Image (tube, rainbow, N blue to C red; front, side, top):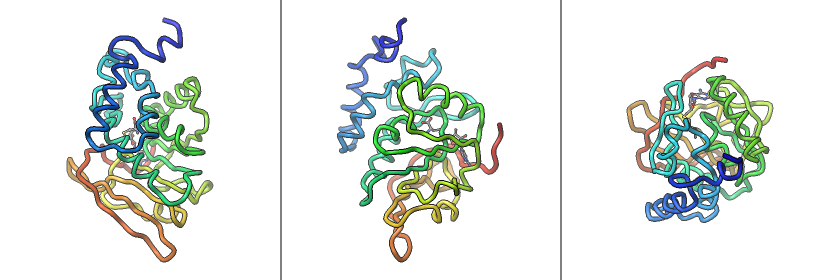
Length: 223
Ligand code: SAH
């Protein structure tokens, strides 16, 4: 199959199928048309195993190997929308949990530069090889532990965390710019709360949203 047909998709991966997903996300409450356009333009079927491609535009999480999952499109859209509602421009955004790079691709279309950290080297390697070929180039990669953030590139205007810690990591709070926001699932059960933390002149303000389901954020990293 030639590259552009592969990217545009056919049948269950076609533009029509993707539009159906976007319509559903809109009905489920996603309001940002720029976020919805990014979802529509991103070939999610190329981020997962070919055997699962026919499910790529269903609103579900799917396995990506190493016991990890590609996040559910609704959750990607919601977290991105919440991040973009910040009062400052999103020039530098830190993503924790690159996984297959799908959320990274969405962010790269909406912000100036994405810094993405993944603790499992082999997963990140795949994303690193895949994303530039699809045209997503404003991205720096680190195989490391998201609990430590990325101090040499701080402060970040936005931080999006795709794995759930038990508490908001202090180091990440410290790496947030004043006016910036972090969107992060927090909790240790099967379901967690989504927290939206904004850094103010004097401290932090926090909002809590409905339950979400993420893999746990784990300490340390492996190549
Ligand atoms: N955004 C990804 C979702 C991946 S699932 C996607 O769209 O595919 C969450 C990812 O977070 C997993 O790949 C997991 O390995 C990673 N992760 C968990 N704890 C981490 C940590 N401390 N630092 C960096 N990545 C971590």
